[in-house]
Amino acid sequence: MKATLTVLGSGTSMGVPTIGCTCRVCTSTDPHDRRLRPSVLVEYGGRHVLIDTTPDFREQALRAGLRKLDAVLYTHGHADHILGLDDLRPLSFHSPGRVPLYVNHQTERTLRHTFHYFFDDENPYPSKAQVEIKHLHGSIELFGARFEPVPVLHGDEEIHGFRFGDAAYLTDMSEIPADSRAMLRGLDILIIDALRHKPHPTHSTVENSLRLVAELAPKRAFFTHISHDLAHAETNAALPPHVRLAHDGLKLEFEI
Ligand SMILES: [Zn+2]
Ligand SMILES: [Zn+2]
Image (cartoon, rainbow, N blue to C red):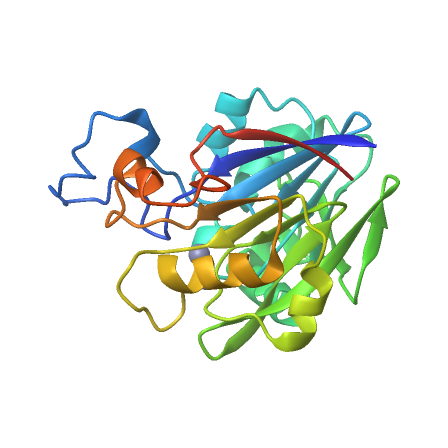
């Protein structure tokens, strides 16, 4: 079935512009150089599946004209991927049931700790988001499409991205284990972390991600979780034609 992926945010955990920074990218007038925290929305068959709830989720949802949400999948529990959970409230109040949040055990612990007043069943906060935690063990089917967690290394920590149909989303990763590479063959679209040129302990570089793109051979690749080291137009000019920097608001059509 046909699906649309919208990049809601393509920036790092600090976003671009970064608070207090006066570098040429943070002060750029190119709207592509403004990057909210990383997240994507997948739409198919009238359903809306969100990957991660960033601290910018409110602005991202308003920009995208999001009016309903059917499920959220989490990659991991870092602040830039979870802190927008509270802003699910208005969408969840209009949802017929509780919005499922698919998490592994580690992310569940982080969500229950960070948002304890949401999940305290003995003393529930009355206007909390109408959400429920669902465990993610391997691939899941959501509304006729399969979402498969793809383990990746984010520094020393193992987290996951997702493959869904002909697309995969791998934010926050420094390396892809061999078993996971085998899950990423035959892709139309690969969205992959490429923080900057300079090495970083928990994120991939442009050069490393270009090597991974060459090996995995998707038809199209888009870099995300981009820092203020990379100017949009200048970086794109130096990339192969089938590899682009993602930008906020980018919409891609694919098969799911
Ligand atoms: Zn991140
Ligand atoms: Zn992270």
